[in-house]
Image (tube, rainbow, N blue to C red; front, top):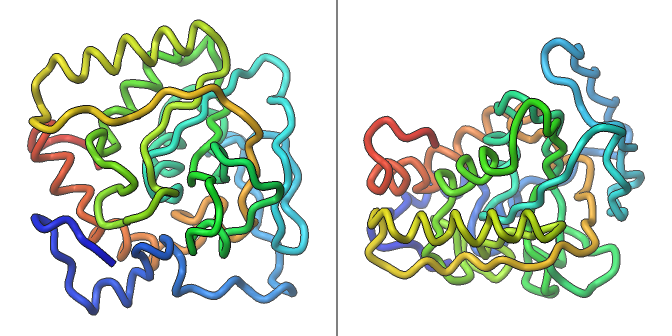
Amino acid sequence: MTLRTSFAIPAFALLLAGCGSSGCNASTPAPAPARPAATPRAPAEAPVADYPVVPEGGTREAGPPPAGMAVATFAGGCFWCMEAAFEHVPGVQDAISGYTGGTEQHPTYDDVSNHRTSQAEAIRVIYNPSQVTYDQLLEVYWRRVDPTGVDRAFSDVGHQYRSVIFVHDAAQREAATRTRAGVAALGHFTDPITTTIEDAGVFWVAEDYHQNFWRTHPTHYSAYHDHSGRREFLRQHWGPDAPY
């Protein structure tokens, strides 16, 4: 695995976090099939979108959002961290980890993490447009990613970690293009902005054990997140109080 030279990670941290060029959960085996289903969250705490659990550890094509909800799709490195960042945004009903941007049908985590597909790790954000705007979601996005990386994100290296905004209509494309130019104009980054803007295609919902990983595996998630280089990078470019 090739790491950013400014954010070298101790070997023990990588073993603990289980993250690298082969994926942000490569060292963690999938839970046994007999694992009981997670207890549903109370709606008042964090309501989730109405989508079925992926059976038998497989992947399936995402369906339409619930009535009254809208969809945004973002890729910006490990989908665990992206999911956690957006699920804290008021007006976001759910952030779903998955794969998109490639041509393969029913991609698996094993194939994606081992560079056997053209897919990117991404999140599908289900949000209430009367409570949060797409521009506000883009503001969260730009402040949580490395927009200068090519086929990498912080300590993770590979095409699956590329930074992409997948747009669902002309309005989203306009907003993504405008805010990308705005980020470049701020001058926070000395390297060029390499985040691409692409039409959204099929979104494959990732295996069940990846969903809400930040809540279901807090120790593993925290170890990875804290040693991924995100905090240092984002605070270097957005200020000492930047969320990470």
